[in-house]
Image (cartoon, rainbow over all chains, first blue to last red; front, side, top):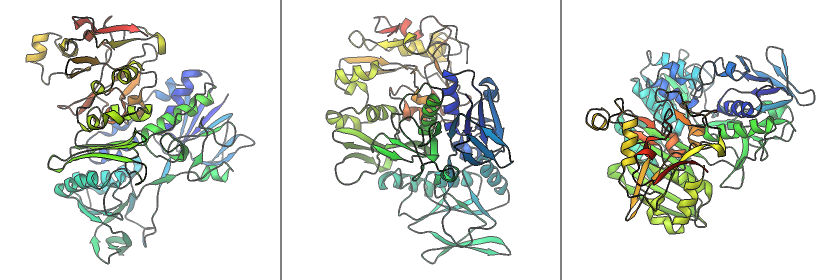
Length: 419
Length: 158
């Protein structure tokens, strides 16, 4: 049995570790277009900000591939999949035969339509090489515009600011972090970023990059204003990197469509991570959820399926834990519910930069946003995952020290018995 | 990280620390036993007077009125903390089943705290690192269990 994995991010590692838990022998080949061994992608902002050293970014030890009997092909890009002949074609001309294939090609930055975006002094912020390029720039530049006020954009902004750059974040929505946060949570973080010296321009976007002698000099905004800058970092989000699968005739929608075993519509070909459109536990439908833990777990279930030890994927829950200038935040599940059919409980302490919001549906917890205090927040993710009836725990869950002792004995004992 | 000496298979055959809330008296000696075990000198006076920063206990005692019990890491078969860790600091030992954490690799992103359904991973505030139970790898009986005067913590297979 020849296992081939396209992509070398966290989903790929989840798959390798799962395959090797069930099958020590079969050859595994990983095709990576990046020239690196696996690294913690979210850590590129810590690296750029100078909070970690480059050797600390690697997600698994140097000997990981050898210890797991994996052949890693770095700097090789897959350009085609022949689903009949069961081969992956590489840009270099070689063909890699497979019996089981995992497509874990991740996401690619969304490219907005901005006049002049295609030119010098425009950067993305999704790879280690992106971080290295920006690292070099910080020595030369003074002013950078970050396009996008989501998680990636704000982490890029924070890191650049820490390196002495004057940063302006331009966000189309009227608040930052609009995907995972609500206005209250976004407001606390926006205030902290502004206090720290990062400029935020909300409800506005960049329509044009103005260059003089081929170098960026300023951006023009949709309201007619302009912001001087020497570079633009585009961080509007990522979209599934599904072109390879689509070209091969594998079923796609927003991402590559997968079943409960992470298999695509082609038997023996699987997808996982940011490229996959997989079961979502709370929405009861397939969704693209480009977050780290889901990618590992999807990769793990794909790997178990590939190694003949299949276990159904229970479905993912979106989750993010991010700190902004010392304010920890956690968001999970449905954090911005539709108006109908949901109950929202919230406690805001703006003077303490603290916020705790819980979202219920049919008496069950389906989402939470925590700002300022996030201790033991995993108990909430456990209640979501286990579908526990929390009707009687509403006031208790709003307390920062909520715990198992607040629960009815039978619920507490059942949850604490598990492993 | 010290090498584990207990050999335990993954899954059902693994010994774990379980609480018995009906006999817990809320004395928190389990937390003290844990702090001492994870302090450099392994001495209760030195751990509490000299160790700087003093290690955080790796279990969490909950108290609500007359009810009290310790919550301990389950060293899960499918560890949500490991799946969420972005730095590769958390690993499950295939021989012992212990879910261990390398503080050198931890970046303090708190993803493990967000993911652990037992809420049993803490922040080590002084160092901005997460701290979790290592099941006292190297000991026959974990220090928290040994410290409990009323056998409200048991180390057993279930």
